[in-house]
Length: 175
Image (cartoon, rainbow, N blue to C red):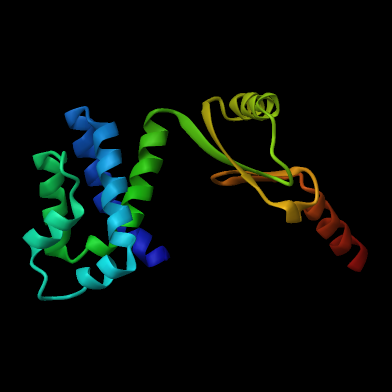
Protein backbone atom coordinates (compact mmCIF):
# COMPACT_ATOMS: atom_id res chain seq x y z
CA UNK A 1 0.00 0.00 0.00
CA UNK A 2 2.77 2.47 0.86
CA UNK A 3 4.48 1.73 -2.45
CA UNK A 4 1.23 2.47 -4.29
CA UNK A 5 0.92 5.78 -2.42
CA UNK A 6 4.51 6.65 -3.26
CA UNK A 7 3.88 5.96 -6.93
CA UNK A 8 0.55 7.82 -6.89
CA UNK A 9 1.77 10.97 -5.10
CA UNK A 10 3.37 12.79 -8.08
CA UNK A 11 0.32 12.08 -10.25
CA UNK A 12 -2.02 13.36 -7.54
CA UNK A 13 0.05 16.54 -7.21
CA UNK A 14 0.04 17.03 -10.99
CA UNK A 15 -3.72 16.49 -11.14
CA UNK A 16 -4.26 18.90 -8.28
CA UNK A 17 -2.05 21.54 -9.92
CA UNK A 18 -3.91 21.23 -13.21
CA UNK A 19 -7.30 21.38 -11.51
CA UNK A 20 -6.30 24.41 -9.43
CA UNK A 21 -4.85 26.22 -12.46
CA UNK A 22 -8.10 25.61 -14.36
CA UNK A 23 -10.20 26.62 -11.35
CA UNK A 24 -12.01 23.28 -11.57
CA UNK A 25 -11.17 21.50 -8.31
CA UNK A 26 -14.73 20.24 -7.85
CA UNK A 27 -15.00 18.91 -11.41
CA UNK A 28 -11.66 17.12 -11.18
CA UNK A 29 -12.59 15.71 -7.77
CA UNK A 30 -15.80 14.25 -9.15
CA UNK A 31 -14.09 12.92 -12.28
CA UNK A 32 -11.31 11.28 -10.25
CA UNK A 33 -13.82 9.76 -7.84
CA UNK A 34 -15.77 8.31 -10.78
CA UNK A 35 -12.66 6.95 -12.48
CA UNK A 36 -11.34 5.48 -9.22
CA UNK A 37 -14.65 3.78 -8.53
CA UNK A 38 -14.76 2.26 -12.02
CA UNK A 39 -11.11 1.16 -11.80
CA UNK A 40 -11.75 -0.46 -8.41
CA UNK A 41 -14.37 -2.81 -9.86
CA UNK A 42 -12.66 -6.23 -9.94
CA UNK A 43 -13.75 -6.88 -13.53
CA UNK A 44 -12.35 -3.53 -14.70
CA UNK A 45 -9.19 -3.91 -12.59
CA UNK A 46 -8.33 -7.16 -14.33
CA UNK A 47 -9.15 -5.61 -17.69
CA UNK A 48 -6.79 -2.68 -17.03
CA UNK A 49 -3.93 -5.16 -16.56
CA UNK A 50 -4.62 -6.76 -19.95
CA UNK A 51 -1.91 -5.63 -22.41
CA UNK A 52 -4.36 -5.98 -25.31
CA UNK A 53 -6.53 -3.16 -23.95
CA UNK A 54 -5.48 -0.01 -25.78
CA UNK A 55 -5.00 3.32 -24.03
CA UNK A 56 -7.93 4.90 -25.88
CA UNK A 57 -10.27 2.09 -24.83
CA UNK A 58 -9.12 2.39 -21.21
CA UNK A 59 -9.70 6.15 -21.23
CA UNK A 60 -13.16 5.69 -22.77
CA UNK A 61 -13.95 3.20 -20.02
CA UNK A 62 -12.68 5.32 -17.13
CA UNK A 63 -13.50 8.91 -18.08
CA UNK A 64 -16.90 10.32 -17.16
CA UNK A 65 -18.90 11.65 -20.12
CA UNK A 66 -18.57 15.27 -19.01
CA UNK A 67 -14.81 15.06 -18.36
CA UNK A 68 -12.81 17.90 -19.82
CA UNK A 69 -9.99 17.49 -22.31
CA UNK A 70 -7.33 18.08 -19.65
CA UNK A 71 -8.75 15.25 -17.51
CA UNK A 72 -8.73 12.90 -20.50
CA UNK A 73 -5.13 13.94 -21.17
CA UNK A 74 -4.30 13.12 -17.55
CA UNK A 75 -5.85 9.65 -17.95
CA UNK A 76 -3.84 9.23 -21.15
CA UNK A 77 -0.61 9.98 -19.28
CA UNK A 78 -1.58 7.44 -16.59
CA UNK A 79 -2.37 4.85 -19.26
CA UNK A 80 0.96 5.36 -21.05
CA UNK A 81 2.82 4.98 -17.77
CA UNK A 82 0.82 1.91 -16.75
CA UNK A 83 -0.53 3.71 -13.68
CA UNK A 84 -4.30 3.39 -14.22
CA UNK A 85 -4.56 0.81 -11.39
CA UNK A 86 -3.40 3.61 -9.02
CA UNK A 87 -6.52 5.73 -9.60
CA UNK A 88 -7.96 5.03 -6.13
CA UNK A 89 -4.75 6.17 -4.44
CA UNK A 90 -4.46 9.20 -6.74
CA UNK A 91 -8.05 10.21 -5.97
CA UNK A 92 -7.47 9.86 -2.21
CA UNK A 93 -4.28 11.94 -2.30
CA UNK A 94 -6.02 14.53 -4.51
CA UNK A 95 -8.76 14.87 -1.88
CA UNK A 96 -6.15 15.37 0.85
CA UNK A 97 -4.49 18.13 -1.17
CA UNK A 98 -7.88 19.71 -1.83
CA UNK A 99 -8.79 19.62 1.88
CA UNK A 100 -5.46 21.26 2.78
CA UNK A 101 -5.99 23.95 0.14
CA UNK A 102 -9.51 24.66 1.39
CA UNK A 103 -8.44 24.42 5.05
CA UNK A 104 -10.84 21.59 5.83
CA UNK A 105 -10.32 18.67 8.21
CA UNK A 106 -12.23 15.49 7.43
CA UNK A 107 -13.09 13.51 10.53
CA UNK A 108 -14.93 10.26 11.11
CA UNK A 109 -16.93 9.82 14.31
CA UNK A 110 -17.66 6.20 15.17
CA UNK A 111 -20.01 5.79 18.10
CA UNK A 112 -21.77 2.92 19.83
CA UNK A 113 -25.16 4.45 18.96
CA UNK A 114 -26.47 7.01 16.50
CA UNK A 115 -25.54 10.56 17.57
CA UNK A 116 -28.01 13.42 17.45
CA UNK A 117 -27.43 16.49 15.29
CA UNK A 118 -26.72 18.54 18.44
CA UNK A 119 -24.07 16.06 19.61
CA UNK A 120 -22.42 16.05 16.18
CA UNK A 121 -22.39 19.86 16.17
CA UNK A 122 -20.66 19.92 19.60
CA UNK A 123 -18.00 17.54 18.28
CA UNK A 124 -17.61 19.65 15.11
CA UNK A 125 -17.18 22.83 17.20
CA UNK A 126 -14.59 21.20 19.47
CA UNK A 127 -12.60 19.93 16.47
CA UNK A 128 -12.88 23.32 14.77
CA UNK A 129 -11.33 24.96 17.86
CA UNK A 130 -8.62 22.29 18.10
CA UNK A 131 -7.54 22.39 14.45
CA UNK A 132 -8.42 25.99 13.56
CA UNK A 133 -10.10 24.76 10.36
CA UNK A 134 -13.52 23.88 9.07
CA UNK A 135 -14.53 20.31 9.85
CA UNK A 136 -16.43 17.83 7.69
CA UNK A 137 -17.83 15.02 9.82
CA UNK A 138 -18.72 11.54 8.70
CA UNK A 139 -20.66 9.38 11.13
CA UNK A 140 -20.57 5.62 11.64
CA UNK A 141 -22.09 3.30 14.24
CA UNK A 142 -20.21 0.36 15.78
CA UNK A 143 -22.09 -1.32 18.64
CA UNK A 144 -18.91 -3.17 19.69
CA UNK A 145 -17.61 0.11 21.16
CA UNK A 146 -20.15 -0.46 23.99
CA UNK A 147 -20.36 3.30 24.70
CA UNK A 148 -18.67 6.57 23.81
CA UNK A 149 -17.04 7.34 20.48
CA UNK A 150 -13.82 7.24 18.47
CA UNK A 151 -12.90 10.31 16.43
CA UNK A 152 -10.46 9.81 13.57
CA UNK A 153 -9.22 13.06 12.04
CA UNK A 154 -6.31 11.96 9.88
CA UNK A 155 -3.21 11.84 12.06
CA UNK A 156 -5.23 12.41 15.24
CA UNK A 157 -7.33 9.64 16.79
CA UNK A 158 -9.29 10.33 19.95
CA UNK A 159 -10.58 7.13 21.53
CA UNK A 160 -13.28 7.95 24.07
CA UNK A 161 -15.03 4.61 23.70
CA UNK A 162 -15.78 2.34 26.61
CA UNK A 163 -14.14 -0.51 24.69
CA UNK A 164 -10.93 1.54 24.38
CA UNK A 165 -10.98 2.51 28.06
CA UNK A 166 -11.43 -1.12 29.09
CA UNK A 167 -8.54 -2.17 26.84
CA UNK A 168 -6.28 0.51 28.37
CA UNK A 169 -7.33 -0.56 31.88
CA UNK A 170 -6.58 -4.20 31.02
CA UNK A 171 -3.13 -3.23 29.73
CA UNK A 172 -2.42 -1.16 32.86
CA UNK A 173 -3.47 -4.01 35.14
CA UNK A 174 -1.40 -6.56 33.21
CA UNK A 175 1.75 -4.45 33.59
